[in-house]
Length: 186
Image 1 (tube, rainbow, N blue to C red):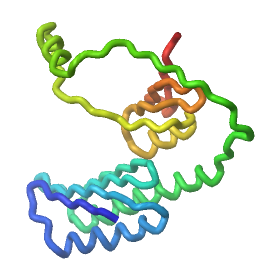
Image 2: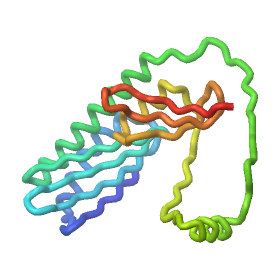
Image 3: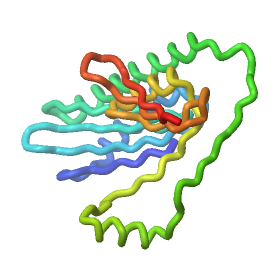
Image 4: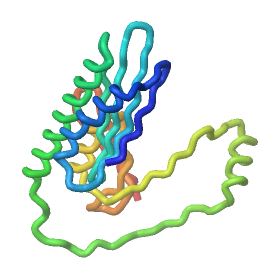
């Protein structure tokens, strides 16, 4: 297990590091592959905030808790992550894969290709400027799997490759607790 612990507006003591590592062992038992954990401990006024992001078995799980004591915040966020992991594992155990593996055809369309520097210059000349780019590794997954991943990550949306259509889709959380799916129209 690889654990990165960072502190904002505070020094991370050895006892805090030991406490985080000890508590993360509880979650490590749920996974068979290597886990990466990014822990950010922060102090803002009188609040002690613990934020943990786990990457394991191809899923990303995020949790954030705050309290008056850092140890209490760490314990609370670990309990929250443990609950999310157990919920995810229950869903996987109930998941029934497709009966037959049908042949899938992959459609590739190249829209345009240009050098990255030219893209940035063109975007700046039009008055718009891209300040952040992120590359996503998209493994094919069903809409149900994407919904589980989105629920676990606490993000507002998830970009994924739909295993049924092999097209890029966007799944987003709606205010009423349901999910919306954006599919390309051809």
